[in-house]
Length: 265
Length: 309
Image 1 (cartoon, rainbow over the protein chains, first blue to last red):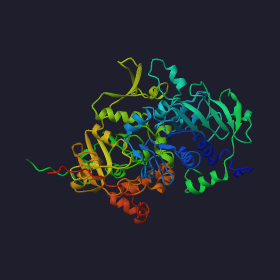
Image 2 (cartoon, each protein chain N blue to C red; image 1 turned 135 degrees about the vertical axis):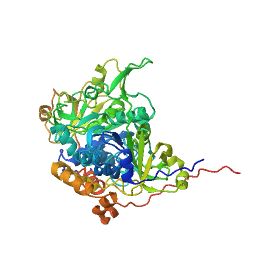
Image 3 (cartoon, helix red, strand yellow; image 1 turned 90 degrees about the horizontal axis):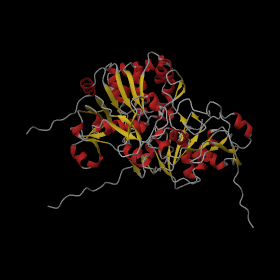
């Protein structure tokens, strides 16, 4: 009997961009069509396509569907996403038919804050009229959360300010929140089901009420995660530990994908 | 019958003729074909009190704000993609420095639907976004209507009809038939929504070139008032097939934008004190522009066919 040698593991830290990108890429193993947002999602989908999911269809809000980039995209409107793509659509076709029409499996977003129900804030820290920090705003996020079958979010920090019980400002509402706004035509999107942070992975079932701790990164203590989360975080019975990125994952990110160190800082 | 006349003019004359103080001006281009040269000319001519409409304000809006051209912004994403914050916008919003900036904010699809309503002469356009969110609380232009077909309430956004829309395209003929390939953004909708349309292009081509590929025309001549040839008119953004985005410029912009004096000095030295876009490009240097050249990746030609006589 032969045994497969397990791939050598990397020692990149869980709060590094490399680690977050690898964990995010692995989440995409079963997805078909993904709407990738600005920043780290661009890096993660590139890695996913090279490792766990070669058939992943990349959709960008710039109108590109079925991108086959020869080089890493330095943004969602990079021409490398257009050259060789399967389609470049009008914005009405992209946002109206592809997204709102219900053809996106996963929306993959960044955010400054995610709350208990999975609502996102990308607008403002503090008060709207007297902001402490003005963030970039919705972009496509409020549209994506309304219509993508589910959304994944990557957070670069895991603390009381990035994971509050309720967001300071709700740019992109969770379906839980949307359903409280009675009388409105309900959004069809399942909302945020997966939040990847430097400490672990929070999950919410598409019809579930709140995010729960489903996974911790190696060396992370569950009580630490709970203490650094802004609500009484439920820990799932089947809690797992994140398998470390492999040396090959990290090599791909550094030597073949982000060779200019745009995202890997 | 009169001969069809050319709409070709200079960038100076196009802006001087069509853009006046206090106007609502849409400058569209979604990461691609951003009309930087035209925006710079608006700065050079010292326009004031403009309402700028742009889905992604980008560095161009940061520059126009620092130049004192803008009093109101209608937009849906206030950063420059992966390159980060736009600090002049943030100073205006966070510290009211040097004065407050009025902002009307949407999501991308909301902003795009505003142009669609404007282009179609509809009062508003419905979308499924925003239910349960705070954007309608801070923007009272996002309202809801009850579906007459029994689906409940639906959010709507109002028509956006700019006085002028300015776009940059790869090529056009002298009549203004503008052809774009790659990412087409909100240019067509913003053009049809506007009272007047200025199109700058990488190159003006014979009308036979345009007519050899009519599907490529994004904005037909009947919607265009002025056509101007401005090579590298989208720098530091890009023109598909012509030149790449100047990513180094985007990175270099962050420290300039962060320093309120540095951004004003940059706008004065690189734009206001330069007579035109050619002079701006000359200061960038030939080497920098050569570094943005792209390799060929032509499409397979299509055959439109011809009736046999």
